[in-house]
Image 1 (cartoon, rainbow, N blue to C red):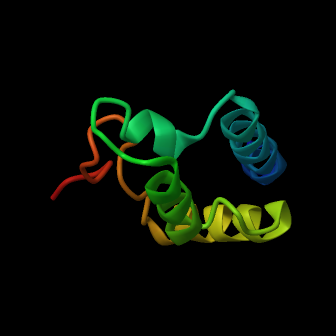
Image 2 (image 1 turned 180 degrees about the vertical axis):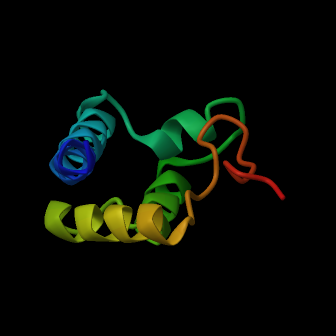
Length: 91
């Protein structure tokens, strides 16, 4: 029984890596920018949206974005909600 539990636990690691990678890819494949969705109801110029995207790291290479994404997930910093601009996990 212990051997089975260890095996299942070890299989959890590649499963989580695959899920995190799929979520990252899906976020990047959605048309438009997450920043454009965040500021949809406000009057931002395209230059201001570009600046916000730059500050949030959306113009960095994808591998850099992925490493930062995984690092933030592992550290528990899940950032701000794109829809409410509040922390995902509020204390």
